Each structure stands twice: as C-alpha cells, then as structure tokens.
Image 1 (cartoon, chains in turn blue, brown):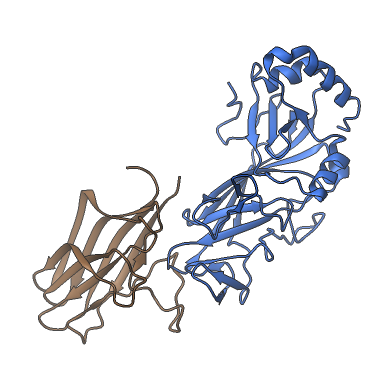
Image 2 (cartoon, rainbow over the protein chains, first blue to last red; image 1 turned 180 degrees about the horizontal axis):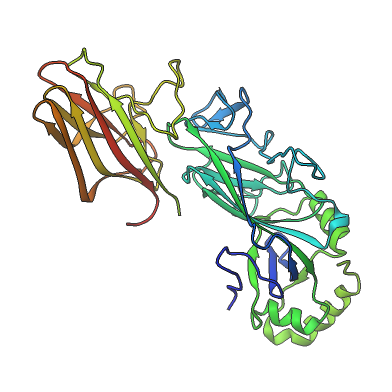
Length: 261
Length: 138
C-alpha cells in the first residue's frame, strides 16, 4: 500500500511522499508534481570527503589521522563536531554541502539515498548538524556510530529539508584502513502539499497510497523547528486515528491555511 | 543489509618457514608505516560474519596455508585456532572454490581471522582468498 516508488526507490510524478518526524509525531505530506532529474538519478560521488590529516576518534579511545583523502582508518569514527557534509565544486548554494538549499526553494525537495562502500561502514546523520538524533529510552541514552547500536550499515535514506544542514557520521568497526566510496540515488522533486484535508487524512491513516519515510529525528532542535516552520509554514500534520476523522479534518483545514507550498 | 566481497592477496616473505600473510586488497589502504601497515588479520564486526569462499595458493615449494580464527584479538596474546588447512604439495598452484564457505562469526566484535603459512623449506608462495563480509543471515 505504501510502496509507491519506482525501481530506484524514488517517488514517481503524481504520487505522494509522507515524511514522518518521530520527535513531534507529525508528518509532512507532499505530492510530487515533477521529478526533474528523471533519467539521471545516480551520482557516483567518489570517496567520503575525509581530508588527509583530519583527526578521527578511535573506537577504543584515542585519535588517529586520516592518512589519505577518503580513507577511513580501522576502528575509527568521526565525531559530531566534525561531520561529513558532502562538498562539491559546482556552483551550488553552498559548496560545503551540495544538498543544502534555502527556504526560498521550498517547492524543491531532495530525496537522497546514500550508499557507502564498503557496505559495513556504520552511518548515521545529525539533523541539524551537531545534534545527534539517535536515542534510547527517550533521552536517557544517546546512541550513535561509536556505540553498539544507533546506526545502519552502508546505507541511509533521508529527505533534505530546505534551510537545514545535515551532518553525517561514519564508523569503521573492522581493523582495516579502507578506501571509501559514496553513491547517491536521488530525486529532485518539485513538490506541493495537498490542500484537501480529506486526502491528507486518508494518506495519514494509510487508506490512500503514499511512500512513507520516517526521518531519524527524535529531538526537535529549535533551529530545525524554525527552518521547517519558515519553509512550510507549519510543523507538519499530527496523526489522528481513523475514528477521529471530523476532528482531524478541522485541524488539517486550519493548518492548511498557513501552508507555504 | 551489508554485503561486501573482498579479494585478498598475500605473499610469504621467502625467508621464514612460518608466518602470517600480510593482506592486500583494492579497498584496503596500507603503507609501510604503522599504523597503516598491511593487516595480518581481519576483525569481524559484531553481528557480521566473514565467509571465505575461495582459496588459491601458488608457490615455489611445499606450502601449507592455514586459516585461523581467534575469539579475541584484543588480548595481549590472542589464541588462534585453525579452521582450515590447504596444502600445496610442491611447486605449482591449487584452487579451491567450494559451495560452502569457511565462516567466521563476529559475536563481540573482537573475533578475527588470519591466514598463515607453514613450509618445510622457506620459499616464495602467494595466496588469494575471496572473502565476503556480510550481516545477512545466510
């Protein structure tokens, strides 16, 4: 029902994308009006952007430098204070982060699947940069790539909200110093938020097909909240049970008055 | 799910009758200087397993190639337990590609495997192994 994606795992034109945020229990519902990079969805980015001599932390304690651009030493990880941002030489909005777009481009949404070679590399993402999002038992424990869990191996999927910098973290829990490689499969969507409360309700009660993506956001940082509000005009649609239809429609209608896209 | 296939290559030093192969691969970065010297063992991350699918040995003389497993490579003197031995009877080469791999599991993330040689007379020999590191169930 919710696998409304093509063979690349991207949302085709005319279909819906639901982005759920666990921290707030809300979701954004987008209709993909256009996928402008149709036919060229793959970027062979190259090595992880780890400059030589960058100090990394050792999983057992201590520091180790990156010996050569893109090499991730054995048993090492990058701390939250030195995230990976995927810079580019192209004339993008911010060359330090090829996926960053400002809030004025709110009708654009990047859906990015990141594949890292070797595929055993642990990966997580801070949203916004510097704010770890992996938690256990509410906020009692912060887990991340340097812990036994709180990460995935070799793959991570996100949408890139405008006006928000993301910071990626990686760890290598073998003893091998490895040459890394990154491939992106992405969709550059032109999106709109459906203006029909009934449709939104049907999507959020999973009675209408939509691709659901749960973002790794368990903490709503103030800068993230501000960016989302400035970009879309609201913090997302709260989810209602199916038997609260009338209440949901009223709430959605009210929220839709302030929607910016 | 993670799944990575590595082709590892190692050579004897030609002067010692026994030793551990330093391992090279396109994906492994190494230099002649510590801590980036070629690895002589591979740690299997917790939750993953190393599947050793193929062994190719060639050399100038009789050579035993032994795959060994350690339950904890972080201790001062790791214990190494043989899990497979391939014998090259004399000058030449041998290739073994099996339907079932040799499996080494990462349970705590400190398990490791290495490939060693043993020769009655020191001679040049090399080994190639195909290793799959995966967290898939089978």
